[in-house]
Length: 252
Image (cartoon, rainbow, N blue to C red; front, side, top):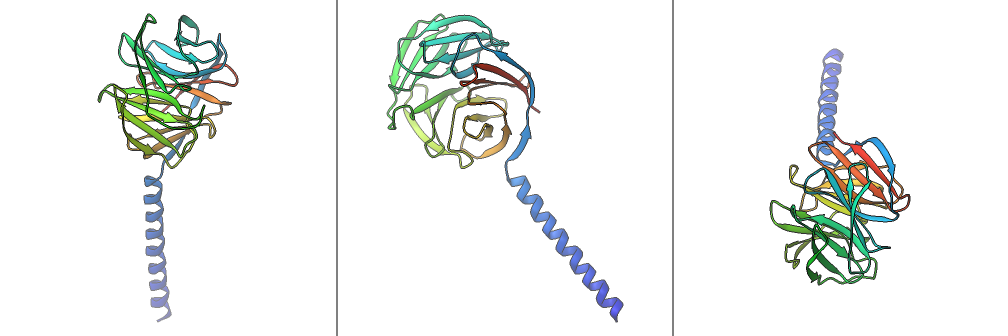
């Protein structure tokens, strides 16, 4: 009799542990996966206080902006300056590539988006209808080529990001629960997802366009401000406003 009772008790314990383990696995699968990036190299930039970063249309160069001299820089993959473009505006914060001939830049102070050709000629300018404290307004911009849509992020305001059509009228906003601090944003078509950089948390979040976090990556960079993703080469690039350095990572 005691043997039967002991056998039943062990059987109940086995099924209890199995169910518990199964629940844990389900919880892990539904939570964001944290991954480590492999640091390849660090390069000192030829300019200071970079704000934004974007992969160029040819995928062999990068665009970056800096607000203290109203300049957009065209860089090689080692962060070296190939050419520069002066912009008529205050407080440049972000940039994105529209196509092989056009880019757009954000003016945080005036809430304007300026569209330029790659030679530096201004094509048009649009005012965004958004509220917010000075220097806590629009922080960065990126372009979704597959849907002809633009995404913006606001710094330190309840984890909000916005998207619009290319004429820059805001059509929706979403919130990311994992962070309330944004430094840069880029869209990777091959993943159909956004990659968002957080200065305060020193992390890169990969999220669905509705805002749900898929993965997060920790980066050991002091005040990261710009982010670009090279999907083909599995490379991730970050610039630091604090150190004036260019960081190259590989990701799985």
